[in-house]
Image (cartoon, rainbow, N blue to C red; front, top):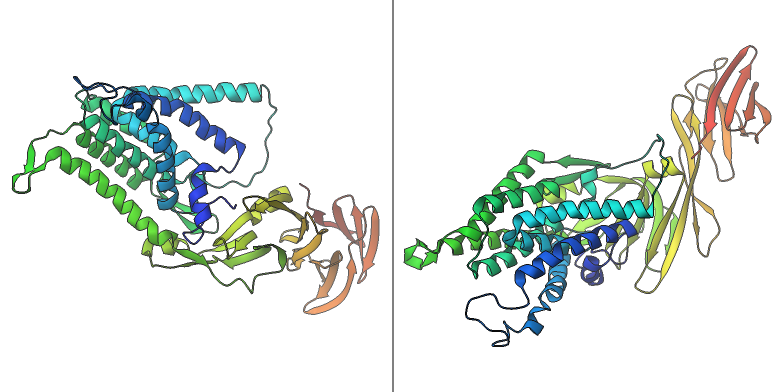
Length: 466
């Protein structure tokens, strides 16, 4: 969390986010992409001058010892630019990987596509060595749409950065790929890497995918980049001495600048006052709590109509906030916690880390949902209750009475009511025990809770298992 670009008001995250990663799989994927695409980009630049008549060491630009640093320096600059101008929150080196791809495609489009296939092969070999055999089975999972985990703006921004750099290099040389190869290379890469997946979050774990618009952008951008790479030097507007290739390349630059301009107000966000947040734990500047239907805690500094409207949502789950870091993040969704029962939230800074263990227990009530409790435990504090749901009433009526389960600070209670009148309450019995509440006998066998009345027997609830 401390290395994510949450906002311009947290410059440390903006500067570190392009070079940090969220997981081992994340860094492995970007490492494979770099090893696949960066050599093609470096070969396209060449350590030695390629123009006829030029000599090595004749100038700074032709010095091989200078040219060898083109990729490392370009990676650093490209990473910083993607960190500054990507729609936050973002983390990862993928913007630079896409910049390598954009650069390589301008010079070697088909080789770059073959390299992507090779990357998949290398990735498969790596996974087969790491996990040579697995056993899989059907299971219930909480999943978000695959495209919702893509930093699409950062990918596009890095891709255009690399493509513009590649255009400047290719335009200065005589050898260029054919228009068909170039256009096909751009389209193939964009489809292969899902650059068509333009989306906006709608809140409540819902997202809107603009598939048709995304496909149109891919084909339009491929055409524009092809024209920019291959257009002639003939004048387009003689009055201002504007040549065709200058106009095409300039239009690509305008697209990149427009993305940069839009990113500025999007990232000028701050965290609203969280003094009324639910009880949780305080660890240095972090506040971690559990809540449901909590409004998005970010406040926009500048109104960006379409984007800001997509940020008007409520979140349910474990939420992490830090005013110092301009951080407001649903770290664990309600559905995720309901599925797994336990999650770990990691927070920290550049030189420290703490964990918050989150645990959910509950009773699934027949026909009407789950009554549950949420507990937190930190490195320095014991397990404690931080949230209880409302009581949940079972659908069946037994002898004209309703049965509910209510979470309490100590345990779970059985509540027997008749209309609006509470007849009696009692704790749910321990496993393999029973109790009588308002004339109804309740038996708990393992995780099952059954009610008995004369010849009536109904299993009204079961303990959550994960």
